Image (cartoon, rainbow, N blue to C red; front, side, top):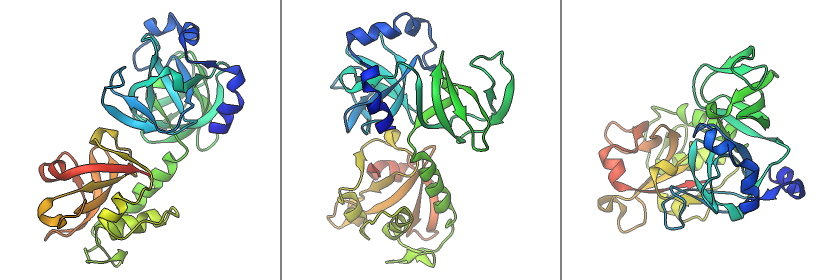
Length: 299
């Protein structure tokens, strides 16, 4: 995605006040969740904020060359965007907008029973119906619709509010979550890092090893490893992210007492040392885990 957008930079406007005119008028009429355009980030660790202000809460950070949906362009110096199911504001100084609307990236369907149509209109014929979390290849944008190619070759259009632009790593994250769920019920073993038994960091270390990523065999070591990008709110997490906790009564002065992996919908999977433990899922908004949650890492 990065090389494609950067090679087209000469064809793109910098998202300044001049570029704002390109999308003017349409934005006011468009539904707030339907995209009015597609852009690409030009700076690494770009902060998506909850409001159009540098003092606003950071929702997540974006890598360079990421394709994002543009939802609104009416705030000077800022654009409201959507990426990977999250929406917020980014500075216009670190974006380019795609003018020919021909590109390639990955999209994830965000609802069940979504129609793939023959044209960019609800009046067009339905070619296929896809369910939530289906991954498709996005090849362009037209009047609030993405042109897509589905897994088995069907080509058509999905309205932009039913599809989240994401990275090519989305399919890897989905595979990682599915792999983790295979071990539900596996017993807890202190020091364990194999399917015969896991402790918390041994479980996350084992999962990420499947992606060729080496992690230390301690929760604190993983949190302090420098791998990936740290996030500090549950709402900023994406499936496949590492999550960390610090219960002072268990951490013995270290930075973390526990680690797991986020699987979506406020849930995480982990190897628990509780009496009824082993590999299981819990909610991050539950009392204990919400109290001691310190952050996550997007690898």
